[in-house]
Image 1 (cartoon, one colour):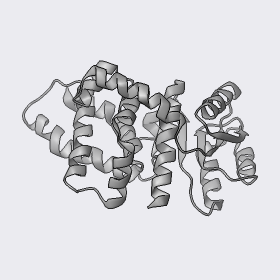
Image 2: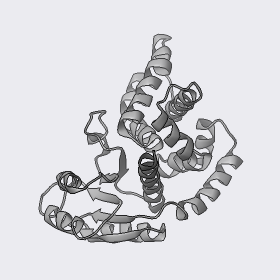
Image 3: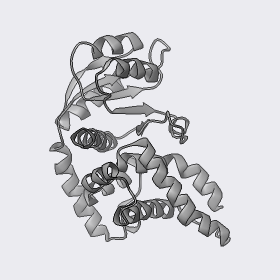
Image 4: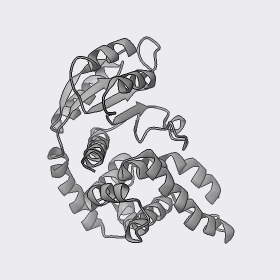
Length: 257
C-alpha cells in the first residue's frame, strides 16, 4: 500500500530534504508540500503500488519546482542553489539513502552515465569543501577513530574525541570548532543530545550537529527538536563525508547570508 510505503519512508524523506535544504524546518516543509501536492493525489486516485524511488523523485521534483516558482524564502533558495548541484544530489541519493546509480538516475530524471560522472566529480569536490574543526562525541572508540579518519581525509581537522557528557563539555571549552559529530547514547549512560545542548548554549553562535544513531526513526519524527543532519549506524565512510559536506556548506551559507 502506498500509505504504508510513505509511513515507512517518511523519516528518510525528511533526512534527504533537510540535508539538501540545510535546515530542519525547510526540509520538513518540502516533504509536507510533496505529500499534499503529489502523494495525496495518488491516494485519492486509488493508487496502491509505488516504489521507494518514486517517493524520492516526487520530493526532488517538489523542491526544484518550488525553487523555480520562487516559493522558497531567499535564504533557503540561496542554500538550495549552492548545495543541490547534480554532484551533491547524486551523492546524497547513493551514499546516504542507498539507491543504486540506476535508481538515482530515475529519481533525478537523467542518465546513468550522468550520475556516474557526477559521483566521480563529487569525490573531488568533497575534498575541496570548506575546512573546519570537528568535535567527535562517541563512546565506541573504534567508531570514533573511524570518524576521525574520515574527517581528516576529507580535509578537516579534529578537535578531539569525547566518550561522555562531561568530557564533551570540557573538550568543547578548550578550543574553537565548527561541527559536532555526536552519538546519542554515551559510555556513562549520559545523553549525547543533552551534551550537545549544553555545548550549544555556551557558544556565541550554534554550530551544525550531525547525530549518529542506530535508531534514526526516533529522531526524524517531524518534531521541532528533530536534527537537521543524521547518519544511521552502521555507516559507510562516503555517507559520513557526504553529510559532513552538507552540514558545513549549510552553516557557511547561513552565516554568509
